[in-house]
Image 1 (tube, rainbow, N blue to C red):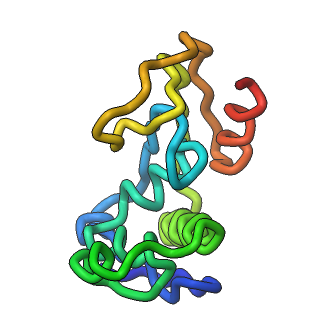
Image 2 (image 1 turned 60 degrees about the vertical axis):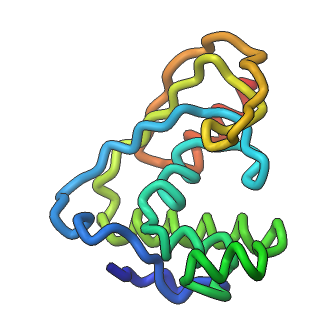
Amino acid sequence: MEIPANGKHLDVDIVGENLQNYNYIINLAHFKGHAMGGFGGVLKNQSIGIGSSHGKAYIHTAGRTKSPDEMWKNGFAEQNDFLESMAEAAKAVHEYMKGNILYIDVMNNLSVDCDCDSNPEDPCMKDIGILASLDPVALDQACIDMI
């Protein structure tokens, strides 16, 4: 299903159709490093995690294609365009849910790599704690500040 994004790169965010069945979301993320995003927390979880396969392709290509096959053939967007697209997708979900989202970042066994990496580095930091907020930007920033 498509929801409005109205961003610089994305006119829509493409998410799983069942999003329309929810009144609220609890966005629970394992905070860690990420090769393309720099870090992965609730913002990455909300954009890439809620995106359908076509939504993931649309974000990774900064709006060039909605086709996962085309994404792999023609490559990803430039770094800044990808990051802006992730922010646009996360904002689209936040606005679609009218702010009815609780954001939680779990900061344990922190690695410089994401769980999505096929061969991630071993964790280099132990448990820091669990942080929560209604503001996803403030939450991910607090995690960065603590690291």
